Image 1 (cartoon, one colour):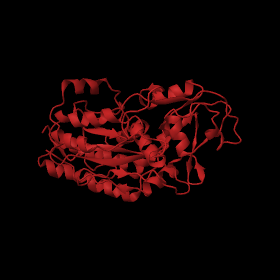
Image 2: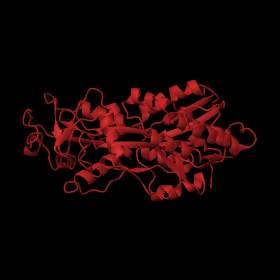
Image 3: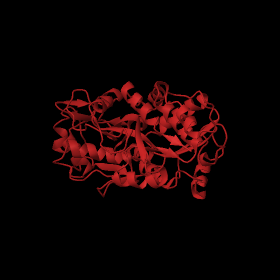
Image 4: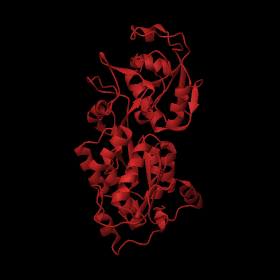
Length: 380
C-alpha cells in the first residue's frame, strides 16, 4: 500500500498549476518536515472543531467536486486565518476526478458529491491502508433545475414530467403534460434542449438517484456518474451547464444551486405541492435520511430519502463529502487533513459556506459524528 508516500511528478505538476489559495510553505504535503516525535500523539492533538491549538504548516492538496467549489473557497479563506502556515490547494475537476485522485494517492483529500462505491472503497486501500477511507458529509445543497424560457417566470414540474423531459420523451415546452401543472403560464411552442454534464459527476449521480426514486415509471436508468441519454447538449462541470442553459433559449439542466445565479429554476412536485429549492428545504431531506452501510468504521455516508413526500422538503439534494484516508504515511499530513476538515465542519466553517454558496449548515449531531470520525485518522 502507498500510505501517501511522495506524490508522483504529474500530481505535483498539477498541484503547482492550481491557484494558490492560502499563504505558507509550498512544500508538498508528503514532503513536510516530520511532525514532533510521537506522530500518533500529534495526530490525536489536531482539533476537529475548527482550528487546532497546534501551529501547523505545510501544503494540503485536494481535488474533486465542482459543486462544493464555492464552499471550499470560503473554507480555505477562513482556514488561512486559523492556520496561516498551511497552504490548501483545491482543483475543482469534478467528483469522479476527485475520487480517482485519492485512490491513486495524488491528493490528500477528495471532494465528492457521491460516496465511494464498493469497488472504489476497496481500491483506495492501496493508498490509505487496510482501514481504507471515510466519507464525511460537509456540504448540503439543493440541486436546482435551471431553465431558459423568457416570459415563464414560474415553472412547476412533477417528478414524472421532469424525468420524461430529461429522457427526451417530452420534447416541446407546450406539451400538455407540462401545461397541466402550469395553467397560468404562456408556454411557447419551443423545442426543449436538455443540458447535461459531459464529465463524470456526483451531481449527475445524485440527480439520477432522485429520478429513479421519485419517478421509477418514467426513468429507467440506473444512477451513475455518467449521463445516460444522448442527443442533448453536454457541458463540462457545473459552470459549463449553467453557461449553456443561460445562452440557449428553451434549455433546461441541473446544477448545484449555488451556481444558478439569475437563471429561473423549476419548482418540484412533492406530494400535493410544488416546492422551491432552498437550503432549509434540502436539509429536511437529509434529516430524514439514514446512514449507508459501507462496512467501514467511522464512515458517515448517507442514503438520502429522495422519495420523501414531507411538506416543504426539496428532494433533489446532494450531500457532498470530504473523503479522507484513515491512515496517512506522514503525521503532519494527517494533522492538516483533520484540522482543515474539522474547520470545514465547524459552525464557523459551515456559516462561511452558507454565505458563499447558500448551502445548508450540517446539524450539531452530524458535526459531532464528524469529529469522532476524524479522531480515527492517524499518521506516521
